[in-house]
Image (cartoon, rainbow, N blue to C red; front, side, top):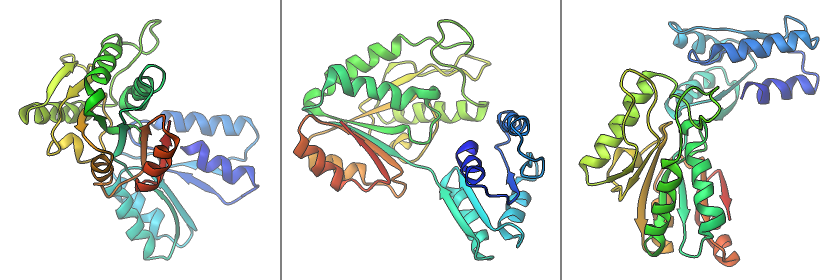
Length: 284
């Protein structure tokens, strides 16, 4: 994210001082990027970093309201995006904002199950141990192919190996902190209390931030996992009957950042793509 924003400015010769406020959880990658920029010849005063954990709100307010800062670019959660947009508005500051999402993943009954849908679900849901902003939160599968899709996905996820990311056979690492673990466990507990079934995973390794990659079946619409963005290795499968129904379900969110759907009918692809209210969609 930082290289996208800072790199573009530097590439066009923007000499305005850049100030980056990285997440408190991951400051070192940003510091490494600054060092690489220094070695490449970027002057010390061009690329700057503010690291903080205790006074995040004060730093954000200063960046948004200071007359010295001409533009704010932020990628993160929807609540924080709203706060920054409001503070920036007080100074009529230019902003580029990327908020959270609640991405649907739709498998229609004519999807290519062998080569496309299941493989894409594995990547879209479990890449980075599920901690990506465009990863899917809700997986809708048409009833006639639901059992096949669930079985194939469960088989893939059961073969994952969690552990040290430097390990030769490791496929997935830990979540970023214990709060993330508590959140995914709460989502699993909530869904199962409402009738969902755990097909694989569903539990944390005690005393760690490792949560077993999980597939839940028959997740009801009322479940918390269906209602908002959460970075988690948790695939929530939901059934649908008709194309019209799933479009309505997919659009039932005010954070349509991204979405994905699978069909081998080109006409259907264009029709569904035109019906989904998303900032970006992938169709196959």
